[in-house]
Image 1 (tube, one colour):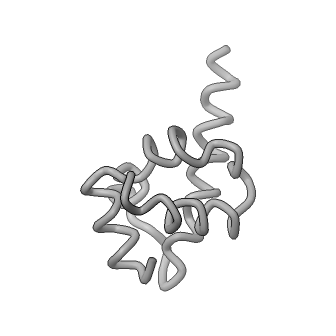
Image 2: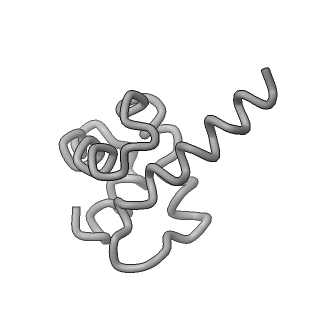
Length: 75
C-alpha cells in the first residue's frame, strides 16, 4: 500500500508539473497544488496537458495557494 501511495504521489507531481510551463516548479509550488490535483483532477495523473487544462478549468475551485501558483504560471 505504501509503495502504491509513493508511486501515485510521484506520478501526480510529474503530472502537475506542466502547469508550470515557464520553468521547473519549486517544491513549494508543487505542494501548493498537490491536494487540489488529487481532489479535482485525479483522472489526469500522468497526462500532462490534461492535468494542466483541468487545473485551469477548475481555477475557481482551487485552494487560494494553488490558484495563485496557476495564475502566476499563466493559467
